[in-house]
Length: 111
Image (cartoon, rainbow, N blue to C red; front, side, top):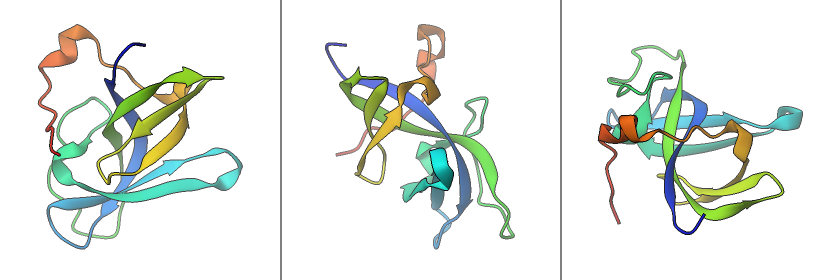
């Protein structure tokens, strides 16, 4: 992989402190998990539709968070930057890489 690429990471979403944000939870092996906060426009349903409004209760929703794979995979581990600005090492097998047909998805790019 010569350059960065957009990937989607399966996760669960919880309601954030503000209406425009979500808490994402990425389960890992051994009962561990990554947690972070992301703007709602980076959060998608499992079939890649925008997640929409936060749940009105404390329920969670399955979905995908968009990220950028910033380094080639080494030993099956990909380095992915997620919308909270953190870089995570994730099993590449768990990442979903959209096809060109899905390239029409609107994924915000902010610096």
